Length: 213
Image (cartoon, rainbow, N blue to C red; front, side, top):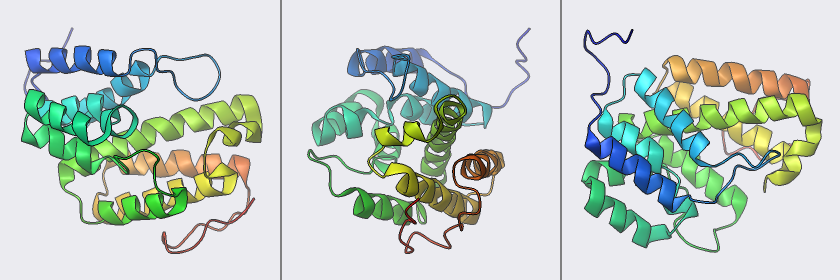
C-alpha cells in the first residue's frame, strides 16, 4: 500500500499532460545501444529518481522533458514548454540542456561549458541533472557488463572522453550538491572506470583533457 503520510511530489494532471507531451516529442526515438529501448523509458527513469529524492511536480515534469530541447526542437521547443508548463519547468529544462542548436558545438567544449554551468546552477536543476546522469551511468555500466568496451563507439567522446565526462560530473555534484543521488552516481562511475580502465587517473577538474584509453 502506498504511504500517503506526506512529503515528496504531489502529482496532478500537469504531470500526466507532460508525460503525454514527452511521449509525442520523443515518439519513435530509442536509446543508444542494443534492444531498441523506447526513449520514454529513460525519461520515466529520471522522473522516478527525482520523485524518490523529494523533487516536486515541476522538477518531475522537467525530468520528463529534460532532453526535449537538446534532442527534439531547440529553442522553439523550449518556448513551447514554457507556454505549456510554466517558467520554472522551462528554466530547469534549459539548465539541463548543453546545446539548443543543430549542429551542436564541438563535443569537448560543449561538455566543459555544461560542467562549468552546473557549478553555479540552482538546486532544482542539479537534482534533475544528477538524476539524468545517474540513470545514464547505470545504463552504461550495465551495457559494459554485456558488451565490454564496444559500447563506447556509440559516444562522441569515445571511451576516454566518456569516462572523463562522468568523472567530472561526479566532481561537480560532490562539490555543489552532495546528496544521496550524487553518492550513488560516484559509486556507479567508479565501478564503470574500474571495469573499463583499471588504474585510470581520476581528473581533478574539467580543465584537464580526457586521457585516451
